[in-house]
Image 1 (cartoon, rainbow, N blue to C red):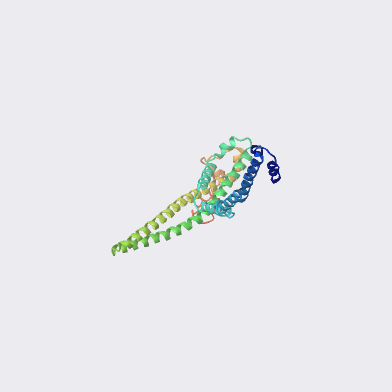
Image 2 (cartoon, rainbow, N blue to C red; image 1 turned 60 degrees about the vertical axis):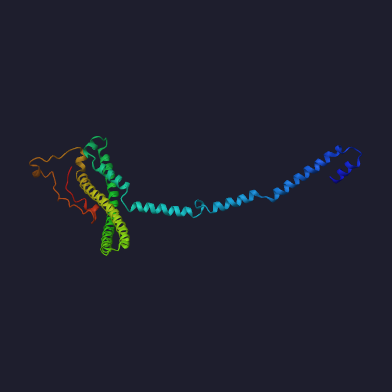
Amino acid sequence: MFALTLAGCGKAVAPMQVSGGRSGMYSTDTLASQMAQAARSRHAALLGLFVAEYLANTPANIAAQGGVNGIAVQQMIIGKQQTVADPDFDLIQAFGDALQVDVPDLLNRSVDRQQTLDTYADALTNVATRANNRFKELNVLLSDLTQTSRQQNKDKSAAERDLKKAMDSKDFTDAGEKQKLVLEKAQAFADTDLQLKQTQNVVTTFNKFLTLYGQKILAIQQNREVLISGNKVVNVPGIDQLKLIEKLPAPRTPSARGGNTFDSLFESTKML
């Protein structure tokens, strides 16, 4: 550029004839200044740092957040298993539907009576096994709820006595705190008592259904050939002398909260 300038100035021409050289210098200087400024301001790098810092402090992107969420889900599942839930009522509905099946009518509608009878017996036993397992789990829960309810009732009564003492002594400041405590204890007892009653109802229903299952599966086993052949035994006068109907001891009703219920269900009367 220096040599160009000298060459331009060395000619005896008008100043306007060397304006190209001067314009080139101005443009070059302007571009050089812009490039230097762009090199000094690294906006993209700073923006990257800001984004990285933001992501690092975001809880959803913490590496351990997945583990924390997993623990929360497990706690939710365990909580569902420790109380009466919708699956229990679904199981009761399925068990009741299976028990209500009219076996003779079912066999009359089938092509293979033996296969149909075996399939029904297996299905009924399967749902009964599931019900019996849940019956045992709810019995344990029922025992725990009973103890918790008793303790909470004692705590509520103690809080009510403390409130009465505070009111009698006209210590209204302390009475306000005692009243709050009474409400908390009463609410905890009411929640546990409601869960206790609900669990008791489900346990009682399972117990009744398991008893009916024992009677029905025993009747199927002892009348298998009669059912497959499609015959019926009618209780008419004089049938006792023919010894066609076997009388078994009356079934013992198992306790809803104790004993091996599933094993004792087979002690039932013979019926068609």
